[in-house]
Image (cartoon, rainbow, N blue to C red; front, side, top):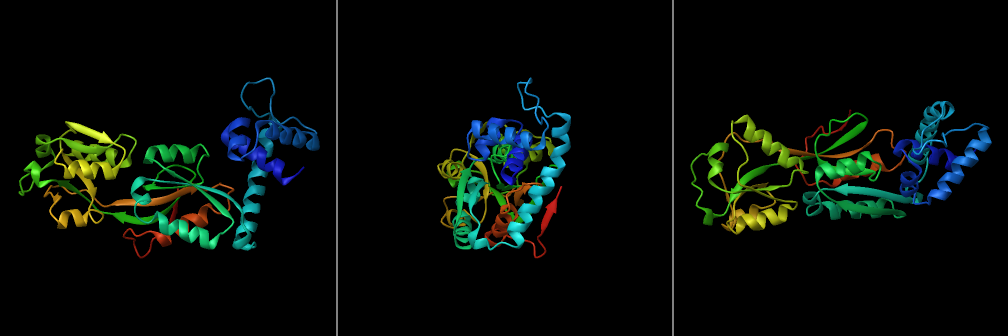
Amino acid sequence: MTLKQLETFYWVCRLGGFAAAAHHLHSTQSAVSMRIQDLESSLGVTLFDRNQRSARLTAKGQELIPYAERLMAATSEIRHRIGDPKVLSGTVRLGVTEFVAVTWLPKLVGAINEEYPDIALELDVDLTLTQLRKLQSGDLDVAVLPGPIEEPGLANVSLGSVEFAWMASSKLGVPSKRLTPRDLHAWPLLTLTHDSNLHKLLAKWFEASGATMKRTNACNSIGVLAALTIAGLGVSYLPREHFAHEVDDGRLQVLNIAPRLPALEYVAVFEQRQIQPLSQVIAQLAQACSTFRQSPNAKARKH
């Protein structure tokens, strides 16, 4: 019985199949199957029911799970607390949303390269809900996205908050007086797609005011939304500080709309039982590199 065999068993159980575990471990399905067979031989028991199409555990397989989880957790802790981080190697799969990618992601990548020179970083840029699904399926080790994410088994490390504001081009002729969500029906709305956390927040904001999101044009890029807004094609909800230059030079105007939404918090999220030793470290590095406005007492939350 080897650590590699138990690690493979852990991921087959965690991801629900031999093919998914092989993909996660950067191995082949035949190699994963061989490790499981060797583990079964060393223990003298059958761990998976071969009569089922899916990787269904036997009673002995179920019994082994908590032992494998504890062993993986102990191994992770040894590597993190005892080992020299400079010699840690492997691949960390980091998912971020577009706004993080165009702000402080280069700073984070530089810090990871400096602190962990033997770590290979795989970056994935996508919308919030897609990144969350990838994290839960094991395709990502850490996800940086708007939150907090209230899901069992996930740890959230706060990265600070971003203030958004409703904006439009002066070409659109939006009055400077105070407006309500219902008043926005007079102009097309430019928003991120349904897979974004921001779209859900705006839908709830309209609903709370007895209004709806009418005449909506959606895309998956904040940069594209800003360009469409500057072109006078609609009203959008954009990060205020990031587009301050466009506001200052008159290409965008901040609208006077009430009630205001609270600032949007961003978090680094990872599985609490994740055996990747660097997940929490990467999340903490993200907190140190974030340029978003952070609370003085920001700390990790677990759900």
